[in-house]
Length: 110
Length: 120
Image 1: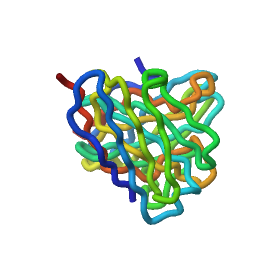
Image 2: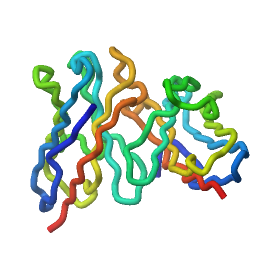
Image 3: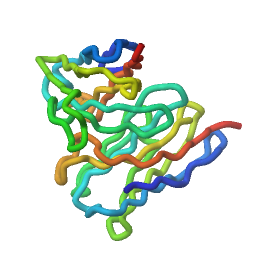
């Protein structure tokens, strides 16, 4: 059972906009920055969003992040087949004194 | 770039030491983390060694068994794993925090991972 809760799956058709939610608590999302990672099959994770809503250079602006209270979300617009991957949210947990990840959301592009 | 090594097959109860060699950046300025992923499962944070060497934190699941260390002169991060169990079977990644001087931020550079299999 992960400290951060994500839906196990999400799907959309090419061109659509999909959102992935991440729910936590006051000791983690509520008081720290949220990060999002994309993991393609057989590869290491890639940082997609940092500090709740910032994109590293090279990440398309189709990806956006937001945070409100103890929840965060990742939005992907203009969905493409290459976006099919696992997506993870993460943050620091003050009570656990450690990084916590969501269980991951498998995105399928239909 | 980060390159892990030291993985392999080990019997339950035995020890293993992983290494993570860094290049292309000033290693001593960055906090470094270990993250693992069991086969078919999600990401699981293991430990962090702060950039200034003053703080080390561990996941409850490895506390007392795993020790993280670093040698800035060699730009290398280590993970000493003792009393291994089948639940420790995973790909182990080292990862760099994106912002120098930040201990708990996003991980912008990941190694390729090294597989640890605990089995008799």
